[in-house]
Length: 335
Image 1 (tube, rainbow, N blue to C red):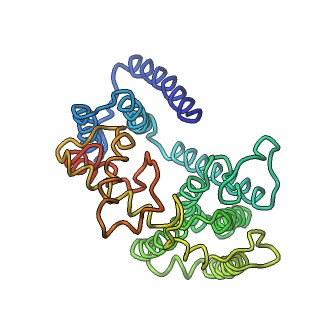
Image 2 (image 1 turned 90 degrees about the vertical axis):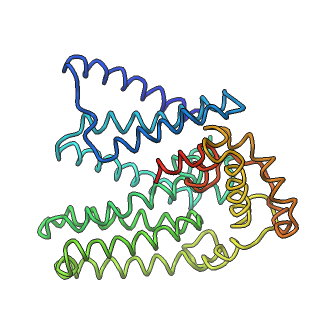
């Protein structure tokens, strides 16, 4: 709640400044991206879903969250129109990731602020995000950016190359420390996609030109992977990646593994099927989840998921969540 409050208040302040800027410039062309019409259509789906919302307070909170994203997009595309600002945003994103990754590494080794001492969950590694899943999500978002930034530096500029090299290793090292399985899977598939895209855009030359740096990076990544994938002197967790991955299939307690995810996904699909056009209403997923969960678990074939029954405000699948809250209209706009 605290983070959302400050994010939305900061955005409202920026929106006010932006509005003054627009008026002084006597108009600004914000309808200049291929995403504008889809985003406006999605905004319409959010508003239409209100017709089925049973809890208007939750609906307003949902609108606040989506409105934050949408307003941010239009403010950015109307103001950022040169490479200098693109570089500033990229630098900010990478710097934030570097701070978060270093902080997570300190927490992994038990170095933290005293007022966080009672924080629990996954070895209490949450960096500046409050939850290890969010840290992992941010790091896998900026790691490919860091890799491309690293490859694009002048070969003669060893300082910039070295900075990119260290940045990649910090992001990558923090990931096994977090023990977030989805992040491991995501970095594998996004990394594979990135290499394919680089090959088709720049050809094999980009790899040849950077071969010595890439060889060094591969060796460093392999060492980090081995050190933090199995119990070792530096692996304070004393757990293996294999055991953590295997835990995804366990269903022994609420929140364990993929079984709870499957339960949430099935519940969301059923929820959306009850209101297939407009959904159950933006922000109302958590309100309807107990009923949907009960319907799924009442079926004999799904009773093995009973130990993972719990409350839920997120589907952990964006498309399923949109289907549940905004129906077919929302899904079409999102796609």
